[in-house]
Amino acid sequence: MELKKIAVSLFVASTMASPLAYATNGMLMEGYGPISAAMGGASMAFDNGTAAMTNNPATLGLMAEGTSRLDLAVGGLHPDIVSKMAGMPDANSGGTAYYMPAAGWVKKQGGLVYGIGVFAQGGMGTEYTATDWVSAGAGSSRSEVGIGKLIVPLSYDVTPDFNIGGSIDLVWGGMDLQMAMSAAQMGGLAASGNLTAGGAGAAGLPPFLGGANNVGYFNFTDGSDFTGKADATGWAGKLGMTYKVNKQLTVGATYHSKTSLGDMSASGAKLSMIDNSGTMGGPAGAAYTLTGTVNIVDFQFPEVYGIGMAFQATDDMLVAVDYKRVGWASAMKEFHMTFSSTDMGGLNMDMKMPQNWKDQDVFNLGIAYRTSPALTLRAGMNLAGNPVPDNTVNPLFPAIIKDHYTVGAGYAFDKVSEVNASLAYVPTVTVTAPASSGGYSIDHSQLNWQLMYTHRF
Image 1: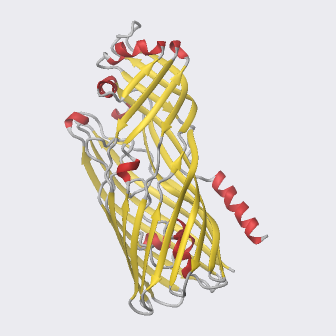
Image 2 (image 1 turned 180 degrees about the vertical axis):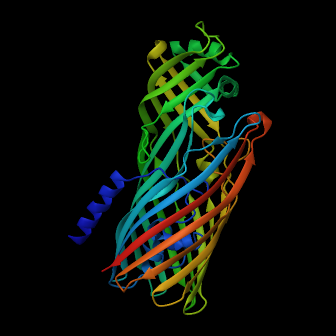
Image 3 (image 1 turned 90 degrees about the vertical axis):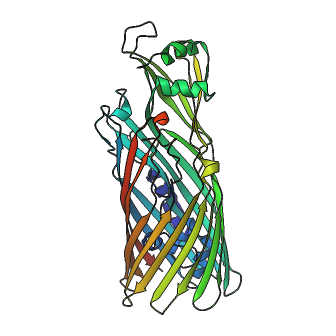
């Protein structure tokens, strides 16, 4: 009965509060759960609470026999993004606060750990006003992409020193997009075979693409910070292990599969062809708006390999080091979107925007020091490369962050209740697209936090 009640509660939380998060290792968060996040995201080989089910599920086996743990958490990601174009006022993204609830429950019994949890996996988001150069006068520009998971983990103590674990993840994704593209940008995609169209309405594309000042505007959004207009569900999974080499040293490893999400779909999407050049037969400035269905084709989160170790240097000091390899090259080769409408005689458009992200190496280093039986202090670093090439970076999707510097603390009120918190400072990263890709530059920094309450019973 206890498990049933907790499972129902967490499922309700997942369906009512699945936020669109702005993530930081590409589209992944720098750390899941404040214990790990305060230590630079290290998590492969020590007990870091129920966040283990989205880090390394085998570390759930490191909890004490016969105990249950309930974690309730919330996080805030606060990006500061400025997009700059020569001769134009700076465009400051209004997307400066993204909040993420999370919850997890696990129980260890007879060497077996089982449970359930809800976690935001990551995403991206920006917001520009209609007057910013990013919007090209077409309307507000906005992007929000989010992936969340309902996770069912299992961990088992094969021996007192060797644990294995895994999980099955129900994945859901959401996307909002308000995006302006110049006729020249769309024409370049068409010339390279990345934009094709059929139907009677396709006859309007050549004159539209031929107008030097014309702008296309894609618009599908529900205006919510917690859902996306286009959505989809799917599956993923994880495997992990930990091994106690001796009393001081534990090593761990994990594999996270690439997600298997269906295509994100939204009805009521709009495509406006804004004829500023007067090339479509009507007056200059006329807008031809079609309403239809948009599909985001094969949008996935990447597979991840992780290894690490935790060293108990003294009774009060723990040092952890992890390495992760994130497979962005396979997951973010292109942004593929289709649009179909019966307006203007019918239009079926297929558009692919090359992304060509690079696989990412992430190094997590952390230390935890227990100053008293109640108080533990933590600090760390998360060091990574920028996976987004300069020639495909977009002001709506600037996932260019590199390094994070983290601190945090945990306080145990008693053997039953404790709180943990983390804070991450992310220095500014600046990239500049080559002239052939727009010549703009983007500055991106962040200040992120997480807070968690734990109850044991």
